[in-house]
Image (tube, rainbow, N blue to C red; front, side):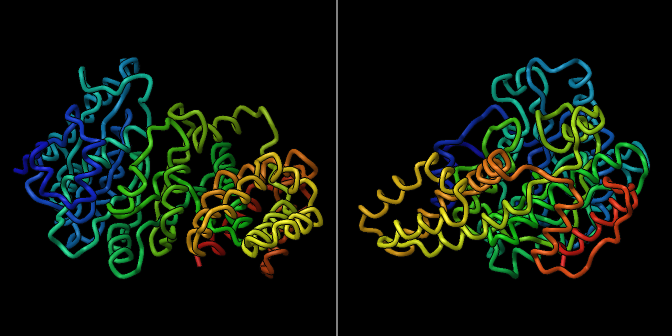
Length: 452
């Protein structure tokens, strides 16, 4: 059994000792206490997810067993103080189920299958009385942070292998090479942060299927636009696909406590200190369900689609990404002597782009850079910090609201494919919205292009 205290923190690498001084807490801990150290820990928030956890564990158990000794599956069973009794009851049953697994009590065939696979599981109780998350901070961001911070204590820092923090969600399943592909990618590639390929289930023909196809098309279209523009932020921001090494996690100050969009801001921070790779050799299968859990994201987009409160078959105008591409080229060539010329070129590209830069005090930012004695690499870093993923999204939204309105989804995709010089196309029918089979064809084409 591994016991940790404030005093024992001195045995950790210096970068961790510094992190723990700011982030050490005693309210939550791993149960049961692991009897070994690991090189990979998969952190999974769970809020009333008993049935889905069983499906997820079954899919994880079908991975390569030789990796199980060095991999820990860590659930953070969580709820806030004011959560409903239904949620708390489900979490209690979840803890009971996980306790049975960790004590090798195979009460049914599914549990027996998971136990016999050798999969290493544990949990953190952030649910029962006295251990709940407070109402102010409680949510998916804090749940991830609790698990990821505590996971840092259970890596084998004496090993030369990379220490990998993997984010997953309880309502997902994974491909049977998931653990292998992530581990090998991080060990073989010069990689400190990554996102794993994802695909929602689109096999049905229900309204829910139509909703998730529409949403995934939106996500992949935006990614295609960023790729076309040459943006350094051309990666998807889905919480259940995030992976990083422990050093990068600590350098950015760990996970945030946001109740939604925690994944976007976490990956944005990582992208400012390292490249975010894309692991395409395996796949996460997120849930397509409507959800109450976060105020926006997949579940809420499905809710909105089903409620039919607005036209969902619209996308950003492709011309927005043309403007973004030209701006990034100008920004990349900007130096301490050519600001005025650059701003003249900006006006030629788009007066809306020029107004956006003014409203975001770009000229003042650059004048401060010019007053400092910065080396080239420091200037590049400052540029990246200013023109980050959030400001990129703000620009696309600004252009949407100032002269480049959204257009029909399938017109937008066709135009962006043309701009990207992609020859492959979906043969459209006369329906402006396209029938469900055609929508699936569009999605499969974007998946193919982004997974190659």
